[in-house]
Each structure stands twice: as structure tokens, then as C-alpha cells.
Image (cartoon, rainbow, N blue to C red; front, side, top):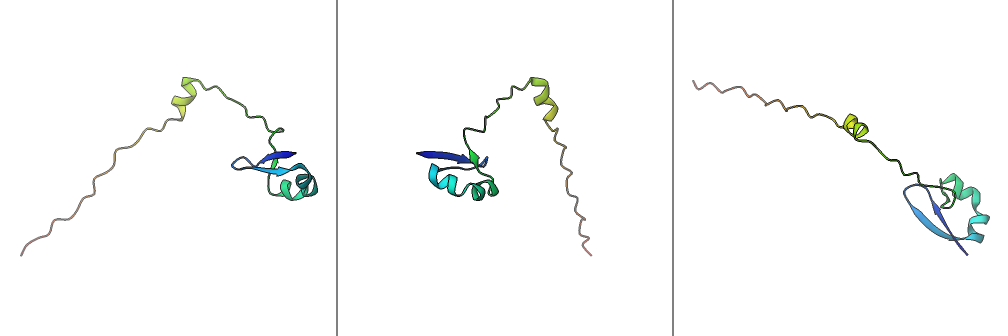
Length: 70
């Protein structure tokens, strides 16, 4: 029987025997069985989204010294 493990970014599949034999190795690497992790779906409101929006500043124009012709 296969078991799916995830560390948040990556999901791997290993046999249950291999997982039980190397459980310390997988926990040190940050992998946990996919069944234990429940993804929470967070509903956001428009106010939360608008609070996180960053207003851009206008870029300053680079000024350059004019060359004097002598």
C-alpha cells in the first residue's frame, strides 16, 4: 500500500513499509502524511485585499548634467 507524503511544496509517494522503517528520516526532512494535513480554505473580504495592496510611487527622472562646449 502506498502512502502520500508532503512537505508543503512537494508531494511524494512511498510504500507504507518504507515510510514506517524510515519515519524519523521523513519527519526530519519535513514530510508528513497527506491525510494529517488539512488544507484550510480562507475566505477573504474585499477590505483585507485592499489593505494589502501597495500604492506605487512615481519614479524620479534621472537628471544628467549638460556638457559645456568650449
